[in-house]
Length: 137
Image (cartoon, rainbow, N blue to C red):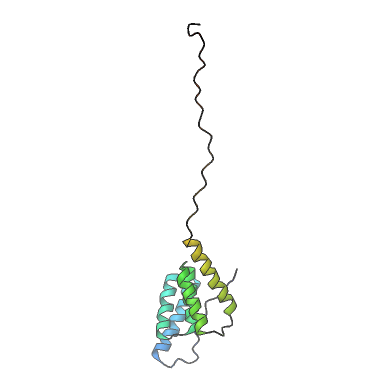
């Protein structure tokens, strides 16, 4: 199993108010993710990306969607991360995550297999009582 940590937004010296707010939101998103509040982590990471579009946040968004079982969205963000950061050090594990998301999407799209019929005893055979011949005997 591949275990990846949420990447942090690294801004050496925030220059704008938007950069500062994005860094604050990214840190908050990481805390929320680490305590299992994936919905709020997703919201904060999304807002951080809107303020300061950094490739690492695309990965974070993929991780949040993956934790929420949003396979298609997770795949989308992982691909975006690799597109924006083609030299990513974690490229190979992210490609594995993309394949995992595709597999999960296919599994959910596949029609459910009908349940095997339960093994039951055959119905009782009704046998007519044996008639004696002649009937008066």
